[in-house]
Image 1: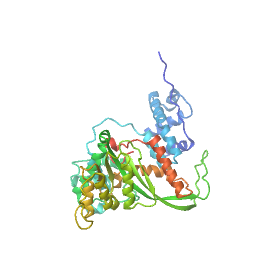
Image 2: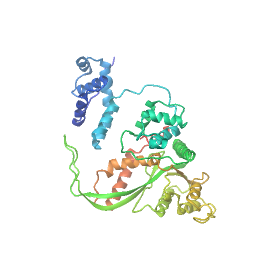
Image 3: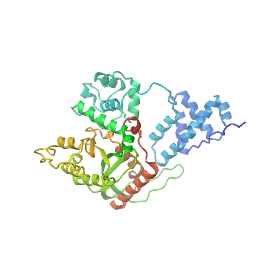
Image 4: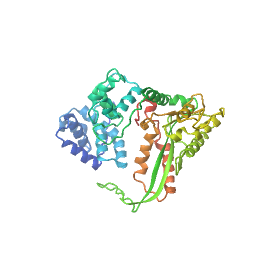
Length: 416
């Protein structure tokens, strides 16, 4: 008969150990969390499950469960430490590790479109709904979304869960406003278009259609620290020089391929003009000239320009009777150009996110990764150095880190 499996080895970095001990000193900490933390602290001392169970007066199966839960999360914790996670971020991660496991229940009853609309209302000031308060509570948001007919019913707990998934914190005043346009029907149609495209990403890829989330990150500064960064040491975090020298800026136009999670054919330059964006799209399509392309972009004017319309018409071999900008035909106005660029019959077309909803564009998630992993701590001796470090990270990301974001499969907003 095979013997029992050896207990999982528990490692506790000193910073995490201090946080756990600090948590134990909280007077309002639930008793179940107290036992879970104590189990991990005891396991980190190399004690057996049986000894821990006797010492704490709990079942050995409970000790084994939380020992294995911690062991499974160790890699994630170590990565967070290496990336310089703040105390608040580490505490949030610890709360996830020690949380109750998800219980089976009813399937999600809300569509991706409903979820996005609930989040959109959450980002409106309550005064627009004639509520004389400065920020939403779950109770008030439930009443508002039911009143608007967005859902038949929803619990306050579900609202709180949606806020947590979307990283919304209405009780804090650090979030920007994402207001809905006056035309709610148009807003809903655009949200549905983007969500449907994300859900179909793998099917489109198999059919030879490239689905690209595209946007610009402007004003990336080439900052050179005037002194070298001091590496971290035991009980001492990395030290960065406060003062720096400015060497100029660069603009990155990035393509996030929804089905693969890779960054393809990026453009790095000084500006983001109409000509820059047309050149970027030209370079992107050149990687598969005969393929079909869908670009998800925001409604910036350069994404609906005369130059882009003319380029698409030429690339798709469409009639060149486009009219005159500001006067007639396809080129008459921003709305006519947008309608042309959205035409599903074109081999190359664009899908637009609603105004003030950049969080609908998946490339924004990747931009946040770029900031955390490179831009926040790096030092650049020139714009040339900045450009090269950006390209090096993109190559590294594509090789080691790239994966489709969860929205590809579930339609849920901005979940990595």
